[in-house]
Length: 170
Image (tube, rainbow, N blue to C red; front, side):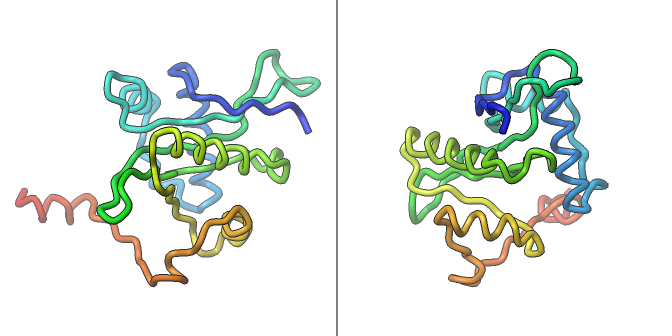
């Protein structure tokens, strides 16, 4: 396995982060839902009050690749608040390029998010996964996560677009 470094994303990584976001959406068969731009990623993650934080997995170039490190995965997270548990972290996305999967990179990203959460005084960190992604479900369980849908029957909901406008009376 190539040497992999997990580090905080920098503003100049936004192009690669967007590339990885698009790859993840394609894998999840949801490419048509990606509306974010590189500019929005920059503005929302690297301004005075960032709305998200991002870790990237960086490898040195393989033989025949362009010089310089390559981003092969990412974990995008933000802080949330639980009225029952207090400070929490939500891992919105975690993705590792297929040719780098199975090398422990995803686990390293998850472990780093857990470190960040503990350093910030968080009591939990949450994430969601599509029900058909058995490989990810199995990994999260091996790492110690419990499935809230199985254990407590929670369902995730989302208001967007017209539904959100209607709620706001617009």
